[in-house]
Amino acid sequence: MLKEQGPRPFLQRQKALEALGTEFFDVLVVGGGITGAGIALDAASRGLRVALVEKGDFASGTSSRSTKLVHGGLRYLKNWELGLVRSTGRERSVNHRMAPLRVYPEKMLIPLRRGGLLHPLSARLAISLYDLLAGVEKKDRLRMLRAEQTLALLPQLRPDQLLGGALYTEYQTDDSRLTIEILKTARDFGALLFNYLEAVAPVLNAQGRLEGYRLRCNLTGTEVQVAAAVVVAAVGPWADLMRRRHGLQENILHLSRGIHVVVSAVRLPLTVPVYMDVLADKGRMVFCIPRRGHVYIGTTDNYFEGDPDFPDIPEEEIEYLLQAVNDQFNLSHPLQKEDVKSAWTGLRPLLRRPGKKSTELSRRDEILELPDGMLLITGGKLTGWRLMAQKTVDRCSKVLRKRFGKKVVACRTAQITLRDVGPGEPARPDLWKDMVRGWAAQLPDGPDRSEEIAENYGRAAEKIVQRAYEIYQNDRSHGS
Ligand code: FAD
Image (tube, rainbow, N blue to C red):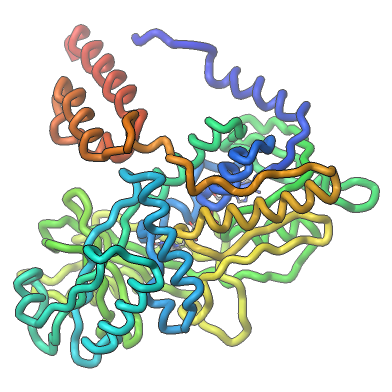
C-alpha cells in the first residue's frame, strides 16, 4: 500500500467548507465550466477575494462536450457577425500564448464542391476576410488548392463535383483540460474552488437584495451559507433553472443539442482535419478531427427540450453524421453505427429569439442582471472565455465601487501564462514533451503515452509519472 500523505482529502474538504461559511467574498461564482473558471481567474488576478462552486465535476457541462476548437467561427460570417468573428478570432493567438500546449494551431481543409456552401471564389473571399479580421500571421493564412492538389492531400475524398480545397488555420484544444488549467491558475491567485457544491437557494437581505447563497455539498448533503458582495451565475444551459430559483419563470434560453461521434482512424484515415458540407442538408457543415488514433465527427444543431443534466444522443443524429462522412469520402466500407466507438452530447445555451432556428441564433454572450442583483452570464463560446470574464468582472467592479467603495484594477489575464507547460521561458511545448518523454521512459507503456501525459497534465506531468512509477514498482514488488 502507498502511504497516504497529508490530511485526508475528505476531512480537509469538510474543514474548507466550514471556513467558507465564515468569510465574506468579493465575488461568488456559480458554475465551474470555462466561463466560471475564466471569471474566477480574472477576478482573483485583480486581487479580489473569490470563491467558485460547481455542482458536479469541473467542466462536466458544455465545457467538456464541445468540438474542442478555439476558433473565430468562420460560419458566423454568413450572418455578418463581423465583431464576433474579429474578437474571437484574435483570442485564438492570445489563448495559444497563454497555454501553448493546450491551444495550438493546425491546418484545416474545406473541400469545395459544386453546390456546396462555399465556392472557390466565395471561400477565398470569406476566409481571407476571416484571416484579416483575426489578424492571422502570413505563414498561417489561407492557401487555395486545386482539385488535384486537394485529392493529393486527402485521397479518400470523393472526386466527383470537387472544385478544389481551402487550407486555412484553426486552433485545437482539449476543452475540459483548458478549463482545469484556468481553474488551477485561478487557485494560484488565491481563488477558493469547490466541486460537488451546488448553489441551491439565494440569500436575500430585508430589501430583497442578494447577499449570498445557500450551498449544498452533493457528496454529503452538508449545507453551508456563503456571503458575497456580488454573485455571478455562469451556469451555461442551467440558466433558466437558476432564474427560477430567483422567482423568474420565463425561459430565456433556446438550448441547442450538438452531438459528436468517435470512430477509429483506421476506419476514417485522415491526413488533415476537415470542415465539410453536409451534402444532404444544404447550408450545414461538420468537422472531422483526427486525434490520437481516432477521429471525432460533429456536430449537429437541434432544439433540445428537457433536463440539461441528461441531454440525449438520438439515433437519427448519429446516422446524420455518418451519412455526412459517407457522402464526402470514398471509404472501402462506408461508416456504420457499429463503427461508432463513443459519442458525446452538449447543449449550447443560446438566447431565444422568437421564430429563429438553432442554426440562425447568435453565439453572442450577454450579461443579465436579475432584480435581486445577481449577474447571469450566458451564451458565448469556449473561445471567448477570457473576454467574457473581463466583461463580467468589469461589471462586478462597478458594483463593488458603487456599493462598497472598493477600487478594482484593470484586467490582466492576457499577460498570464496558464499552468500548462513546465518551467522555462519562453514556454516551449516541444522541450516540455521531450522532458516528459524522458521521465515516462521508466514506465512500461510510457513511450507510447508520454505525449498524452504531457498534453493532458501540463506541469503536473512530472508528478503523474512519478506516482505511476511508484504504483508500478509497488505492483512489481507484490508480484502482480
Ligand atoms: P458549462 O460548461 O455548461 O458550465 C456551466 C456549469 O455550471 C456546469 O458545469 C454545471 O454543472 C454548473 N452549474 C449549473 N447549475 C449550478 C448550480 N446551481 N450550482 C453550481 N454549479 C452549477 N465553443 C468554441 O469556442 N469552440 C467549439 O469548438 C465549440 N463547440 C461546441 C460544440 C457543441 C456541441 C456545443 C454544445 C458547444 C460548443 N461550443 C464551442 C460552445 C462552448 O462549448 C460553450 O460556449 C462553453 O463551453 C460554455 O461554457 P459555460 O461555462 O458557460 O457552461
